[in-house]
Structure formats: C-alpha cells, structure tokens
Image (cartoon, rainbow, N blue to C red):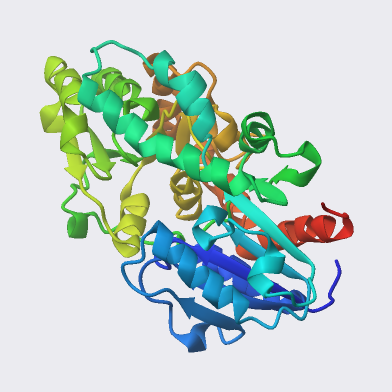
Length: 401
C-alpha cells in the first residue's frame, strides 16, 4: 500500500451511531493519511481519544443550500498540497456542483478523488422491490407514501452525487452493481466493502432484570424499524409457530414504531393473540442495545431487502446467535454461513428448526457463537481500513477525466 502522505476528508452523519466508522477512518493516519473527520450532527468525541484526527464541526441548522456554501468556503481555505480523498454518503451535501478549479480559485489542481459511500440498495427497492412486497393486509396510502418518502430523497441525492463522483464503495456487491446500472458509474470504479463491526459490541453477562425481562423466558430479539420490507409479517408468524414448541417464548422488538406503520402488523398480532408475548421497545442508546443483544437467546432478522445491516454484526460481536434471511447484504457479512444461520426460504416455517436447534443443542449453539465472533473479528476497523485504502490507491493509479 502506498504510504505517501495524503489527505482524507470523511463526512459522517454523527459520532455515536457511527462510532465504528469513526474509528476505522481514524486508522488511516497510520498509513500516511492526514485525516479530517466531519460530523453533520452532534459533537465529536474528546480530541484525546483520536489525537491524529482533525475534527471538523459544521454550524448548526445548515440546510442543503447553506451547507453547500459552507463547504465551498471551507474547501477553498485548504492548502490542497497533497493527493486527497473526499468521501461521504452523499457528496452532493459537500457542494460539489462546480468543478474543482472554480473551488480552488485557479490554484494548481491537486489529485482529488471524490468517493461516494452507499449503504442501501435504494433504487432496487423503489424500482424493483417495493411493489413486490406482500399484501396479506392491503397497504394504506399513508404507508406507501411513508416508504417512498424514506427512499426517494436518497435516490435523488445519490443521483446528484454520482454526477461528479470518481469512485463508489457499496457495502454489498448488489449496491455496487446498482450504482453502475442506475447511475452510470463505471464498474471498474466501484467495489464492495462490507461495513465494519463496532468494537463496542462485545459479549458480557446477561442482565435481564435491568431490561425488565424474565430469566425463565426465551428471548427472541429483533432490532430495526417495523417495516413491511423488513419481514415483520414473517417474524410475527414465526413467533406464532415457535410458541407451540416454546410456550415461554417472548419476542422483543427494539426500534422506532412509527404510528403510520403500526396498523398492518398490529392486526397480525391481534389475529394470532400474540400481544402478551411481544415487548415493544423504542429507540435505545448503544449501551442499552448491547445489553439486549447479551440478554437474547436468538436474534431473528427476516428482512426482504437490505444493505449490510449493522444490527447483524453487532449481534454477532455481542455473542448473540443470528437466524436471518439469505439476502446479499447479509451474505457479504458471513459468505460461508459459519456464524450466521441463513434461511434460504424466507418463510415463517423456515425459522422454527434453526431456532429450536440453537436452544436445545448446547454444543451447536456454542460453535455458532464462536464462529460469529470470528466473523465479527474479520470485520474489525483495522481490517476494513486496509480494504478502503486499497480502493483509494486504485483510484489514484487511474487517470480520471
């Protein structure tokens, strides 16, 4: 890997949610990069925690247009005396609507590579997957509008960003291919690199009492938004089947339940008389979330459409076995299925036997937990940063227009 000193400017949404990524990019300083990390929201960690990182804070309450002005002024003030990588989820937010010479005010043009980081198969969902979602209970227009309101702005921001991008990193091969297909990014300038696991999520002693959970119950965990495309209907039906085998089964659902989303799955719960067997938990901080992973017997994740979900990696890191659907975004986490248990047929019946085996076969359970720990270790920040920097090296080796 080339160790010539270079500049790396990375924009992240916030620190607490993306602490693993913060740590990953901070490691680039060990490879000769001068690292600047920008947070769109919230404070940075103490500077002493990452002494080799320059922290950049945006003014409060910037909208898209005022943010563009801020970035133009900020970038124009940089010395630009070395090859530079600019990376963000939406580079359009950095204000790159004009070519670098205008931003640099006729200074000598350095090597600048703009990298777009994509984390969810957004176009595929809108243009392929959305209307294929099950209609066991008809979707109300509010639910359809809610889904499109979530996804369509992302497509627009991605399209804008790809107008001036030099390279795309997707956290799955599916996303990298979609960037080429929908946005016209050359396949040679895109690659798939999975998200790192957050080192904060480690095994530990169960503390169910602190969470209000009973020791004599079997805790099945789901973490995420209760959306139809996340397979919530499969999850609820699987609980109904498991209840016959495990009367003490309890499903704990951690995540934000939007009022506009509740009607369809509430009906499923009522029809199966499962209200007393499900505990709904709103958004929680990282410390509390880690305790839920540690307290759970199994995590279920029957998603139909996914990027590379952090929750699966977090569960593996915390020692919680995972039974989930076999979608590209999860398969890249554990290609061989050593730690993750995949259900090829993403139907409620497919989840029963894997869960029962994990609960009844102690040796099998421990092997899966150990394999999951190895998977998590392979995705630690120090492993992921080398893949990212190799991609940067490839971009610098190319003569880009």
